[in-house]
Image (tube, rainbow, N blue to C red):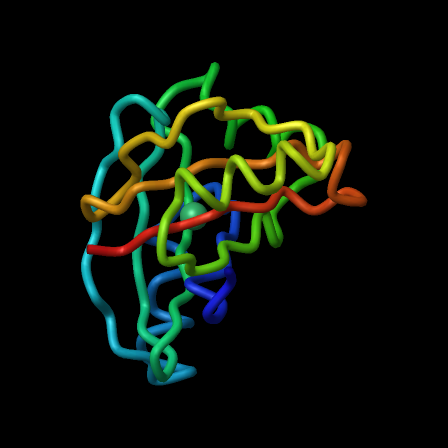
Length: 133
Ligand code: ZN
């Protein structure tokens, strides 16, 4: 079901403040910035081999990322696994008793199809299923 780690999401207060670390100090390939309106987040992507680091900056005070930063501060926000078929992966997790935040796959950044599992049923790690097109 899972092919590899798609990306690691990191919650940040400022993309601008952190981009130079990933791009210039670590020397990662910068793949661009995208705003995902329905998630109230601005993301910066960096390639690391065939996986990615995704920085997440909230665009509003009621963004899920703003709430995360308030509670836990900057740091790793979620781990995303690449799957062939987001819908069937979601159904498999639900069948195994995992509580899903998304009952249906939805559109994420960069046109990917995604679904999140609730950290309550994944031992504290917000877990994303990603189907890339
Ligand atoms: Zn993600």
